[in-house]
Length: 400
Image (tube, rainbow, N blue to C red; front, side, top):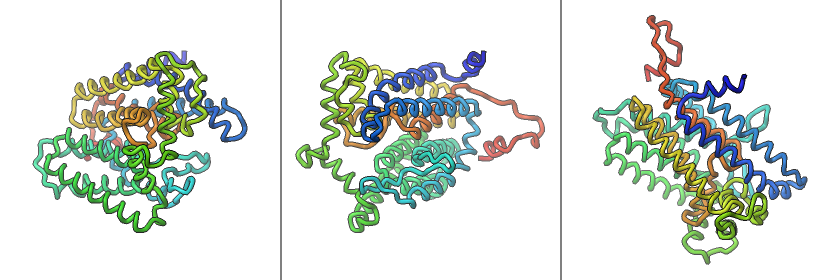
């Protein structure tokens, strides 16, 4: 009876609910298969606990998505303004802790107090920033604005957040910047100003690389890692050891054939260091063949189609930009992950949304889809007659 009530409470686009459920259920198989490598590295041989951990991440993700889709989407205007300084503070704390992995700067995670769970702050920053940009673009819609007028309210938060993510995570910085540019373009921001921002971003990145090269101790070896990945992508003979994962990924895909080797029968799950996260797609193709690979591609394409439909049907400019801003990066990231696996893109370290293991990726994807579902539900609340009956979020949303 309780389950029936929960399903009746699901609002918004039913196709997106179905897509998320299918992807989540499908993810259990490859994650469990890849867990053998993790269990071997861990030394205890217990593969089942990695599956349980993934299931818990999925369950919590669905809880987040369910809770968020119940929030009227116009509330996210005010919430984005509140959370921008919060995520900036979290990014500063994350970067300041300066954690390293194998000698490389990996200051991407922050531990949540009490429970001690690691959380990747850049993922939260990405969602909050896209909502914030959508809010600002909706405000200036059909208004004549100068570049100077938009510098502080729009580009200053964008610049600060990207600058704080860049030292530890170039690929995420590039994706967020690309998505912001795409959103401001679709939001009607003047093209000449977009060109200026692109030029500024290129100059800033160049300066950062030059400074990092001049003072390598300040940034560990992350810049060298980026440049090596790009060099290895364009020249396979640069460093064969550095191409290890890419070559194993291609080999796994080649062995998959049409129908695959079968569940948990892929040999590359023990050869790919990131088989459960960054390189889970080659493992899926090896074990489930071209059919399994095309199934994932079709799911993400269907998600893209539903996002387009929801954005088209949205009643306000903010709602349209909100769906595009938080929804499109999910599909974009998915195809980047799959593109890396087949050798179309250099190694980026991006996970496959709702498939790869990792709590932060799952939770933030569900957060973004919860926002999309909130828009698709077209939930409107009747405004109270008396102004003092408005709750704080109503007042903040109307003001901002």
